Length: 479
Ligand code: BGP
Image (cartoon, rainbow, N blue to C red; front, side, top):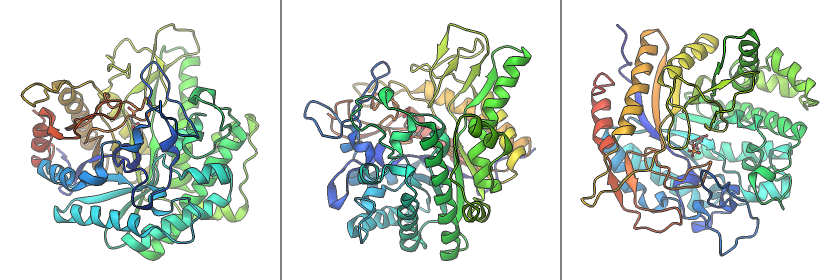
């Protein structure tokens, strides 16, 4: 029976704007993430171009990884991490995106982080852009809508490749690039279509601009991959897809067709471009039907062909159900929700819990792409109770992860070439969808509340020891 490969990359994942804090320290510029306020499960986050005293901006302090990284990495090492997926803050390197020179203190910070990881033989897996574009790229250039941003990004990426070519082998050009299929993501990518709008939900949307912005991101990725391989031929580049596993709510042929079409469009398009080098037929046709005039010339098409990634990564939190019939009960989910699935339970934030869906997804994507796969995000957001004796008993998190790892192991037995697993938010961090702190994912509790108050002390949860045992047994002991 097949087991996890002996060099399997066990680890955890975070993103700069959700952990670093120090939002203006050592020359960092403002990121788009820095103007988004705290929200909740029921109250959406707001954007405000002008900082207001009465608002809390979670990224400003986040969990202060900037000053705690040594302690945090030591804790990762204690769990036995083989890899750590992190992102670099673009605005720490180029504070406005178009600065003449990179910020030396920003460059140094990540050298220091990589040196610390190396001490414990932890492999960095680096996301170049994780919803973290410099604000000035949004306000001056209109974000990814503008083709000039391709060059700004490539210069940023090449700066990283040149500085860190001895320290980093695994790169991910963009986090969840296909989030751009949904209007809310355009803000994160700097397309501040209406800078006066106060709520995510009030952002105006122009699908033509949004899909062209996405197209520019994929061209930028291809250019960066090509340049990166010239700098170090042993670099690996991964596409990163927000994979929303979809089920027909009924077996009515119309529901099956609906799910197939949405899967082709939302889940496959970006991975096809970034791994096969061209848009799939279905997406091209669908975009045209939606009135999108893709700005993609022959030179750019050739770049997409040449600059393909070599491994597939994805985030998996839950599945959704869809139907052509009206169903009244709905669920939430990562980026999007669906109809309630009667066979699944849900998290406190109403995200369905579906471990088998992870195996289904692994089989599906490996069959389609036949490249090594890494799960770069998976986990459960919960309210954790810090007990008076300084313990956190998160058996619900252990149960979620155990069930998912078990299905992941079955997918390996099925023959999927899986090279790594990064538990999302291995260190408690700021939630993207709500900006909350109380929605916690970590093995490590951070003493900070939704308003930014707390000692920022790190505390091991019960899941910490459990994950250490999982890693020590290379995934054979999930008890
Ligand atoms: C993904 C993002 C992550 C992370 C995760 C969990 O979409 O890539 O950055 O935040 O979702 O979502 P949330 O933070 O909303 O719970």
